[in-house]
Length: 117
Image 1: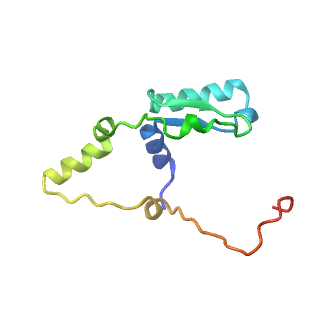
Image 2 (image 1 turned 30 degrees about the horizontal axis):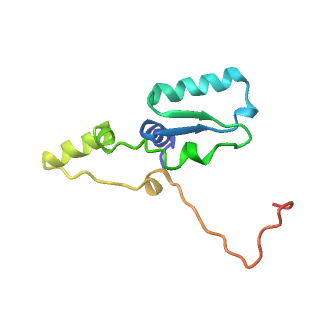
């Protein structure tokens, strides 16, 4: 698969809310640098700094921030639409295939031991 950097950039560019996690583990200077980089890719997103994973659910769920009109004007959508309007087929490759991302589900009758895990 390809480097996941383009995928991560795309995710940031389209996000309405971005949570910067583990801010408690870096200096304020590093947190500011990461936030600046994120805002350079998406100046309109709500950026939340999380410490110890503490984020209010109301900050990330049912925010009402998604705007289909704005999203449909984004470069990736435009490129696909232009290709299709010119008669070209826009080949879609899933992220799992393109970037080699996979997942699995572990099932067991007993839960993991909380301390050993």
